Image (cartoon, rainbow, N blue to C red; front, side):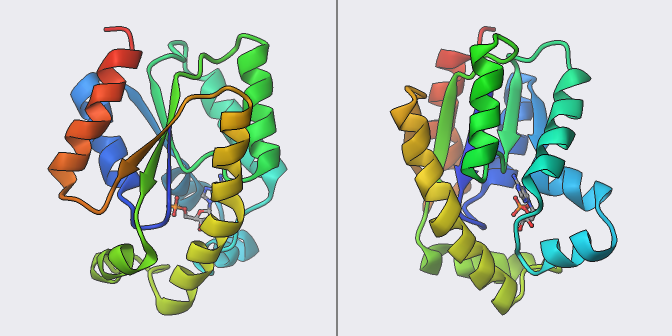
Length: 181
Ligand code: AMP
């Protein structure tokens, strides 16, 4: 399993799709799965850029993973986003259910990604929601990166401010090295 992490607009979704197609991997995009699953108040929270409840997220990831037999060839975009989610993931690794190869961290500044988000024009890509997701990234994702490192998970920082194909080439180096053919 490979984790793709990064600030909103850093290209997690795009790069995840490209890599999954190039290497024939499963792709679990948390945002896409949630956009299919959630309704009502949860959906409003999502649109406002707030994180959804940990136990609900974990239960969804658990169900998706249950349905996949080849757990090595999977890229997850957007999980874990809290320490609780990271702890759960590590429990799965420790119990041998998951083989976690590497966390690829797409690094880009707020300024660099804001333009991209505004151009993308998804319904949650409005000023307030963008700010909320940026803050969430700093508050939640950054500490998780450190937490993963302190638990001996390999984390690689990738400069995601570059052209999409350059970033892809860089990421691919880690995929081909880490995923068995
Ligand atoms: P994304 O497409 O990854 O930017 O995710 C869109 C929205 O889905 C986020 O702003 C959150 O509201 C929700 N979401 C995605 N992944 C998670 C997660 N791992 N934990 C909690 N909420 C999440």
